[in-house]
Image (cartoon, rainbow, N blue to C red; front, side, top):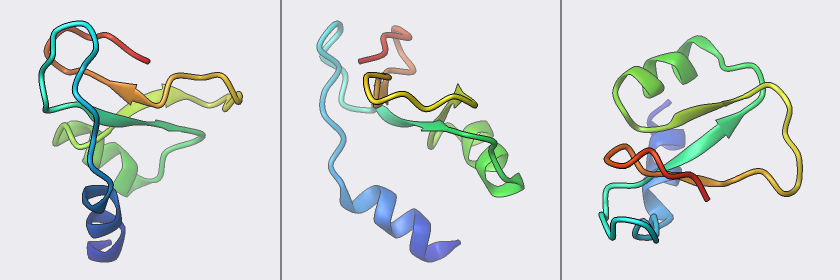
Length: 68
């Protein structure tokens, strides 16, 4: 789990295009594991749903809830 967390943090999250905040998080698609639910509870990811489509948003802003 520590390796997965390090990989997530190694990719710099972009600033939110709507409110310019820098604390954006990736959106996780598919059936989340127990660790995925825990990461969502900690605010490290947003659960996006079970269906992953190529044009789904990749990032979410916890402050304004914008997804892109």
